[in-house]
Image (cartoon, rainbow, N blue to C red):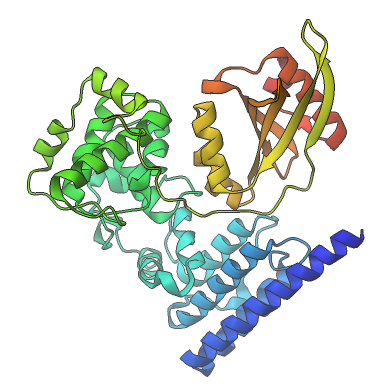
Length: 409
């Protein structure tokens, strides 16, 4: 109980500091922004728990306070009074923030992924204008997005997953607009393409190439994108820093990158005697720990009855998810936004034998229901018997449940 009290006190200090910093910025803009921010803050704290030290993580509290300040800065675009807002009955701060943004700015439906514009604070003014324009009823195709949506892409964009960033949602819709599968669309959105823009002519041909290949392994999608980017940069002698270099003939450049199955194999092994590719820059996401713990279990396994140490630990950053995904050859890295918004928590089960720690399975838990909904071995294979036995031990210790499909298995 003492440690829990200290945690809440630390969270309160961070939250109070975030509010003071926001008030200083609001003061520099003007007294009306200060009043609007204070009204928003008081309403959210009175009607919801998303800014309570009991529930908000320290890194999340700053983003939520910055979102309220950004809404206050755009007070002239409010379409309804703050006092008329009724928050949804949920502990999800993402849903509460989406509801508030829709109440204040939207007379017409706005895709939920656009809520990320407010979490960007003062650094996302352009994205916030996009949100306001969509809420006023402007067409998706009229917005000055980094890439101009086709009709099919604009239609797909309305259904982009809520947990994607705005740039990632645009890439998702770009793939879906070309009849790519939802799985491929998410895989592309999680590559550097979901974070960067640049020569959209060349990128369009890269995306079209990926769609033409059908369903690709997500790790391969990431490596193909890195491969195209590096080859393109080498041909144009342009820096890799944040943008895709320009070129006058994107089709020729895609063709020169090599499109056959042998090239794919070479990409998987690495090319030019070097590592496969530099990793895309980290998205830098982290999230608060789940309200339940992991597991350490020493048990005698195998024909030799040797003691082996089984562990289950939570992965709490986007970098850890990427490491897990690369090691296990599956797509868990794409779950970072979902974890950051509090919908899921991801856990890695390992076993230590002969002095080496081996990964056994990756586990997804629905945080609200405390339900294990997915358990995946390497390359998405089903978990082995021993891993399931360890999983059930963890379920019993932490008061979790198994989804119906896992319980039947």
